[in-house]
Image 1 (tube, rainbow, N blue to C red):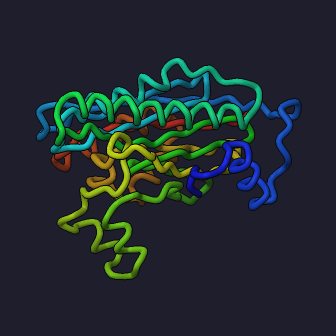
Image 2: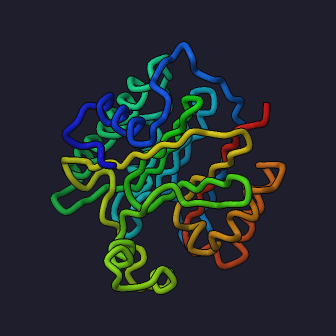
Length: 270
């Protein structure tokens, strides 16, 4: 769903209605205990780390941002997104929180645009963004670009976001297979990013959480080296610190050709 031409409250209520979820009532909010772990690594090929991460567990917000490689200021762009979220303070009303996150992401977009414009007419300072926001019993996936959010529930691992990328568009149109997309020469071409246009188009989806749900936010530096199946095998580990460190080690062992960012968050059993 695109967060365009509608108020955040309307968009949120439409989503809830579509899923036949219970109505919003802050007084009935169920509190879940979350655990999380985050790491970012430059990798073995890049000279600089243009990823930025945020583990803001106290506010139920996690972020991975991947600065656009090959462009000026990628590290600044990703850090701008994280800086916009770092002092986020959750409110009781669910729709107000989602609206606030959207506004902050749009402000990050404006900041990147202004900074790029000051640096020169052809300067682009862009970044992807993948966010997880928990407001129990709901969690929200908010993203721009091809950084991803996965969920491990029971024996199933599911990608909760849909890449904004050229190869994903080709897959959606049936022109290439998912397997072909993994090795496509245009695999790094994204179709949306923060900082590349005045109107930022953001996608949002949500789910109702269950105890034991484990979420992974990651940049493409992870999933280009590690398969979805392997991601799932790591997310089922009892200790999320182990899951995080082992996923990073696996990506590095296979070349670490890009910056690697990993955030793992789990709804703990109560």
